[in-house]
Length: 209
Image (cartoon, rainbow, N blue to C red):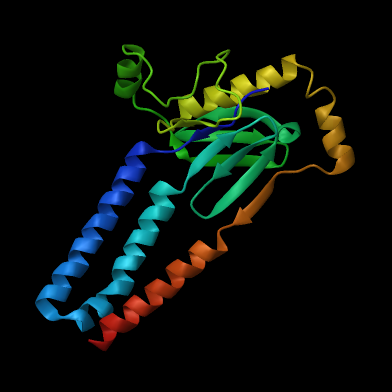
């Protein structure tokens, strides 16, 4: 049918890179002024800040493909096969409703009224998701750094409508029930563990004086 569409936040990525750069500068400054030992003591705290920024602002995103919608949130990734999809709802952020419950999309907040007016008055930026009906290059994912509830919701609805029109979802709900097709959620165990370890080490270093 079409290429996979990937949505992430450009602002979030800039913020993460800026945080990492500030952390690196801080470590270099501590090394120059107080020595490598003090820099080593500060390393867990800097690492904690960078990992948290990455988890909050870099990693979250949405992938829309012919097979499913993948929602990467802060603490987990949810796979929504099309037979379980019901609709999208626009609240403070995008919500994907499925036969197994609602999935809130952390990476797709509702655009402000000002932002919506600005977008209506200009051409789409490079890298933005194609409009419904556009044909992306075959075999290449279409990436967008404009992950808003409106842009992601439009992409999900357009892909679902195209799959329905092509007949790929005929009887999908019945087949999903018969074969036990459900949404699946994978907790980011490594990320949660890394934050917990870095937080514990940082507290230990700070309390040790």
